[in-house]
Image 1: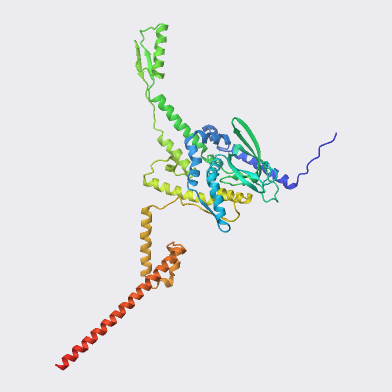
Image 2 (image 1 turned 180 degrees about the vertical axis):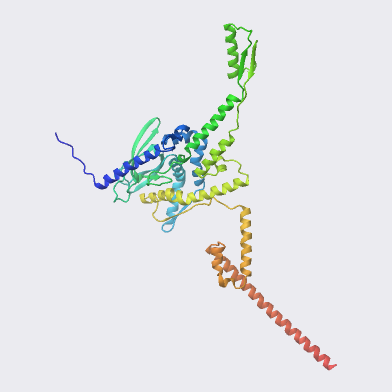
Length: 476
C-alpha cells in the first residue's frame, strides 16, 4: 500500500502556527480570568450573570433587539458619513476621474455601502466590502485573484459572521503577511443558502480598533456589554415592578364563622382571577375581608443614569447624543461640539485613510477609476456658533490693536509671522491683508502729499498777504 506523500512544512510556518496556538491559549486564559477576585474564589461575572466569552451572535442579537446597543453601533457611522467628502486627483486626468467618480457615487451608491460596511464591521470584529467586478482575466470566478476589470457591477457589504476567513497569508517574506487571502461568503437569497469563496483582491477588509494584528478589531459593544445587561435588568425589572406593584395585591381573609361550598369557592376564585388579570373592577364577596398589600414601586432613574454614564464614557458618545435628548440646553451644546470634534477626528484618522482611500485605490488598481494620487476633503462637522465667532473676532481685534500700537513691534515679531502663527490666518488671507494694507498706505501717502502741498500753498498765500499788508502800512 502506497503511503500518501507528506508535505514539508518550513520552520517559519511552524513558528507562526505555534505562535497562533499560543495566542489562542493566552486569550482563553484571559477570558477565564475575567471577573475573578479573591484568588479565584469569587467570580463577579458568574454572580452577576455576565458571559465570560462573547460571540458574534451575542453582539448581533444586542444590536438587532436593543435600543441603546443599536445607537452605540450606528451613531459614529451615521454622523461620519452624513456629509459626503470630496474626492479629487492631485494631478493627472482630473476631469476623467471626476466624471468616473461621480458616476460611482450616483449609480453605485458607493457612500451608502461604505457606511453599511462601517456599521457591520462595528458589530463584530471586522466587515468586508465585496467588489462585484467583471474581470478582464479569462476567469471571473470570485475565488480567483483579479488584477483588472472591465466594469464594476455592484458592491456588497458583509459582517464577520457572513464573511468568515478562509485563509491567511503566513509567509513572512510576503508583503501581505498576516492579512486575509480569502473569505468564505455565506448569504441567504430567497430562502436559498449561498456559499461563495472570495479572493481578497475583490474585497476590502474593514476593522476598527486594531491592536495585535491587522485583521481583528474591537466590537463596539464589547466594552459596554455588561452595562447593557445591567440596563436590561433595570429597565425590564422596573417595568415588571410597575406591572406587579402599580395595582396592589390583596389579602383575602375569610371570616371565621363562614363556611363556603365548593361551588362558592370556585366562583370566588374566578372573580378574584378576573379582578387581578382581567377587566373586572368589582368583587361580590360575602364574609370575606379584602386587604390591599403595601405597594413597592421605586424610581429606576438613578440606577439607569449610572449605567448610561459608564456606557457614554466607554463608547465616547456624549450622554445627550447617545439618548438624543435636551438639545436646547447649554450643556447639550457643549456635548454636541465635543461629539462633532470626535467625528472630525474619526473622519481624518479612520474613515478616510482606512475605508474611503483604500476603496478608491483598489478601484484605481482595477482600472475602474483613472490612476493618480487622490485628495480627500471632508466637510467640517464642528462649526463655531455665532457667539463664539464674535468673541474670537473681538479678542483678535484687541490683540491686533495692541500689536500695531506697540512701537517697533514688527522688529521683534515680523507682521507676516504674527498674522500666521499668532492670529491663525492662512497664507492666502495674509497676502490679501498685506495687499490691502499696502494699497491703503499708498492712498494715505498720496493724501498726505496732497495735504502737504495744500499747506505749503496756504502758507505761501498767507506770507504774500502779510508782505502786501506790510507795504501798505509803510506807504501810509
